[in-house]
Length: 431
Image (tube, rainbow, N blue to C red; front, top):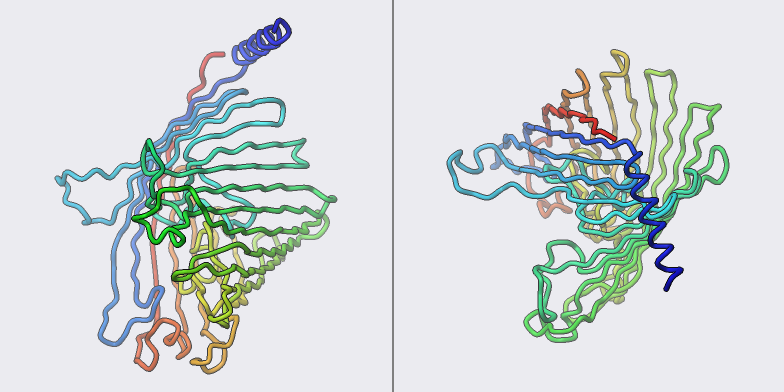
């Protein structure tokens, strides 16, 4: 006991001394981001009888962050609304907590972070903060983070959800896609141009099938689904080229009516970017999201999307956020131009879509194509403008996939314009 007391006393003394010497910072920040959209066939073609839609959404955030060499803490409040959604004098509670977390340095290279926080890894195909979304993605989660000289990084996370502080086990009405979730991620620099990252996640939800429905659920029996994969990045310093390849797989169980099916999905992606000159980047890529061609084999082979930022992949018009049973193949390429000392960027990207499997009700696999044009301008550190235009070239297979087979549809167009004001103030605290 004496040794333990001495260790504890030394630890407290070291912590106190470190905190007194550390530089402490407090920042206050905000964001106001209105975005106007004109939708004429966004996500789904419009029939001849339907008209284009116009609306304005706004995201507002206000937060504060504190940090020193031992602890860090951040709280962000958020309001998300569509203009005109509620009267200016309506008594409607709308402000929510977007982030509320704290982290502590446990030992050199090892920290623990707990609370509501964003989770992002690699290309963000599995976990993303989804910044395009008006609300974004966050998780109530506990994460241990290890960093060895920026050469080997590892995260281990755990989340468990309830609707309230319960006294006996009851059914959790899902606010998230999971009741329980675990994540293991690591990154290793293999050689100068090569980096390997890998991720594995288990999502657990309540088994209400075996007990005859939600009303009868009284235990803690779960069914589990697993998603795991890796990313290999090649970025040689001597050549203005970056190439990445990713592969993800799914296994475990998923409910199907009154029984469980086995998961057997996969997701492949590759991307290459070449800097022709400092102001011009060329990029090309490919994505394959598996489909399910047999509904009677007790397997679901279509890949289930988890927490990616949908708008960042498979075209800006979000036709294939969920590829569904048909799966998806996306071949894309484009060019990014930078002007005005890189404060302005103009991006062109073309996508050619196909189903991953042959749907017997379709003529071939082609799902049309999409052209996306995006312009971004950063006026200063606080203010930026962004706008874009997209056009989807719809064919009959698209109409069939969107339950509009045989119907006449309008040209599919989408445009948006937004600006973002993000002021921040750094307050230096006394040591």
